[in-house]
Length: 336
Image 1 (tube, rainbow, N blue to C red):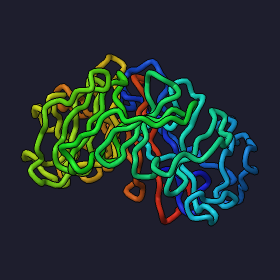
Image 2: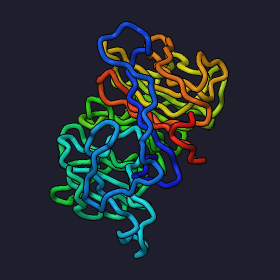
Image 3: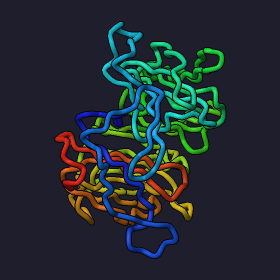
C-alpha cells in the first residue's frame, strides 16, 4: 500500500508505457532516474497545503495529517491514513469523492481532498469498498456473506445480494469492480470462485479451488478472471491462471504470482501488468512485464534493481501503467 510522506520507505512513481523501451512508438519513453534534490531535508506542507515538485514542476497537495486526526474506532491518534491498495481507484465516477483507510475503517473525502466524515464502522478495512462505475454516489462493499451498497449522498445502506450458500464472501482484497461496472469476481468461503452480475442479480458458474491456496482474484476488462495460486511452476494450479467468466480454465499466464494489475493495451488487447521477480522462468531480471491474456505472450517494459519491490496501478485503456517502487531499508534515491 502507498502512504503519504512515509519516513521509512523510498518510493518512486514510474510511468511505464505498455510498449517496451526502445521500440518504435510515438510517445516519449524515458528510463532515467530523476532524484528529488531535497529528499532528506524536505518538510511536507501543512494539511491542505501544496508545494511544487522541484524536478517535474507538478503541484502536489497534502490532504491528510494522520497524527492530528482522532480515530473514530479507538479514540486515539491515527498512526496512518492511506489509499486501500494500488489496484482499485479511491476516487468515484466523477472524481467528486474519495475513500481513504483510517487504519480500521474508511473516511469519506471530497474530490479536493477535504475530509467530510467517517463512514459506518461496518465499512471497515476488510470490507473492500468499490465505487460504482454507473452512480457517482454509490459504492459496494462486503459484509459477511452479503454484497451491500452505500449511498454517500443519503447515507442509506442496502443489501444487493445475500449469498446464503456461504458463510462469507470475499474478493481477496485486490480485485476491483469490472470495467463495465456490472460484475464482481468473488470467492465463497475462501474456496468457491464465481462471477456475480449486478444488473441481473445472477451468479455464474462456480469453480471449486479444491482447497488449494490462492493469493488473489482479478476480473479483467472483458469479465474474464485470473487466479493467482501460491504454488509456483509450470503445472496446473501454479502461478497465474486465466478463466473465462463462466470459470472455464483457459491457460496459464505466468509461472508465479506477483504484484500486478489488469487493463487494456492501446490496441484493445486485455493485458496483465506484472512484476516477474518470483518467476522461475523469468524473461528478464526484476522486470515489469506485459502479459497478453489472449495467448500469454510476455513483453518486458522496464527492469529494476533487485533492492526494489513494486506495486502496479493500470488505468483503463490508457496505454500506461504506474509503477511505485519501494525499499524498506530507505536507500538514497540515487543508489539504484
